[in-house]
Length: 484
Image 1 (cartoon, rainbow, N blue to C red):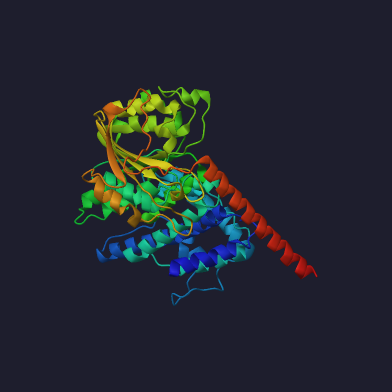
Image 2 (image 1 turned 90 degrees about the horizontal axis):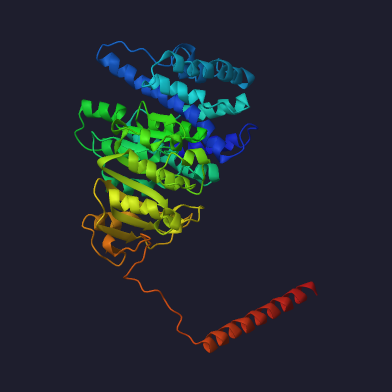
């Protein structure tokens, strides 16, 4: 695959650059170069379409800042003119001293709802870390080989880009905070089934995986009209993100997926007082995996009627408030939410104000390297919960055997009718106690009980101890013979 081999070559170059030291750096730095090449191809496509219709087209990135001027200059025959290409210190000086300031100026020249403004935001919040102009020249030449002018090209590129985000997520906490496995996201999107004309929101959007997949799902429906396309582009997807790198990756990710002017803002969602959220701000669909295990200062906690220092519990209250009456949500949350005493009042509120119709129980290996168990809560706002359908994904996942969409196919099939199976069952909310404990307890699976007597267990342990002693003695004999 062209994209895969290209990114491997770029990563190899960045490993030898003094300005980049982690997988996060590799993704960030290759992303801004990739973005400019993609954007140039996008403008070329628009330019050609305008020519066919005999209409004028003015490039957004123009003059000396076009890709074929500073990055890959062309000679009279239209071929790469390596002799006039900037390299070394000259290239770094141009990028840092001219290109980035030019792109950053877009935030002053254009309105916030334009793609020009979004480009300005991206390059205001990112900086070039590549210290060697020779390394940057190598990266530019690799990326220039990529093409984005067909749907197949763009699909392949987004698939590889998502894989890079996954690798970044596995590189450490900072990356892992905003990466959710795409098979899980796609399954949640399919289950919630957002429709064109509905608004989709993620208040902790990270790399915008939920928003990107929702766009792909909604855009993939046949027979979309030009007005529906405009709705998807401008009035459908909304996100908020606090972390700087995640915010920039989210903006670029959405543009690379086809959303030309993402409605994503950088802010701490939890600093918003719930009582100030108006009906006009509420959304039809909420898809999210909010960060858990974090904490917020006391004044932020005062924004929520149910007080908690746990960020995930604050986000849950935010999402419930942001959801329109009749709106639908699919939220990933740590499974301790189902039984934790600190979340009792929140569970009660959720069950009384929303129909929590489905709980998907996931094994710990779904989030590679995180070592936590999570559940997905599916609910509709505006009516109390009467019955909850559970599905337990009873499989083991590792780095080499990660979650796939096929692993969740049975869940999607059974959820349509809320049928009972070996891995699914329902409970009546009326059967819950005062603690509103929603713990996953599969009635179709009996816990294995060790029925041996204490004497039998003791004999088994003694036999294992004796066997271990024999093995150690054999190892010592082999070592002594080798030394002799």
